[in-house]
Length: 151
Image 1 (cartoon, rainbow, N blue to C red):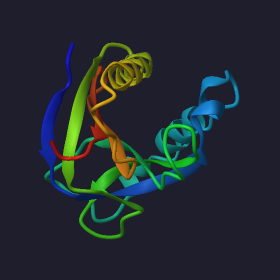
Image 2 (cartoon, rainbow, N blue to C red):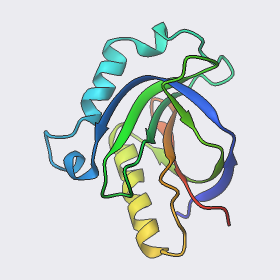
Image 3 (spheres, rainbow, N blue to C red):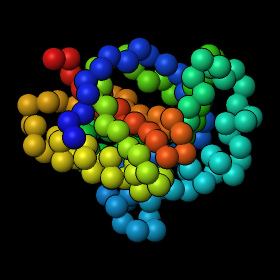
Image 4 (cartoon, rainbow, N blue to C red):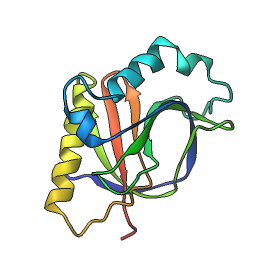
């Protein structure tokens, strides 16, 4: 399924962050992202974060602080949208939206596989590598949004 290109306004997210690489994340047992999400839910971050944006109650995984491209280090923040006190800012701009549905986290991992396949097949589409995000809309539904250069 082809992703949908859409413009996203900037928004702020507060939560817990880790720094990692794709190389670390693909080796079983060495990834930091599963532990980040375990802490997010275990510490009830969504319930105890002040200044939640009541217009957007989704959980977010925000990818930012890119060292370079898909081969460099980056930050991942598991959090919620806030009106102040942000940990990270999602930049405004064009995003490609990939849908994920099914059992989490496998559905999101499958969506990321679609992301990698899409960019391999479409080298003319350039990623920005400034902010990307996952938005969890239900326990079995999410979107993976990848920032791209304007068309």
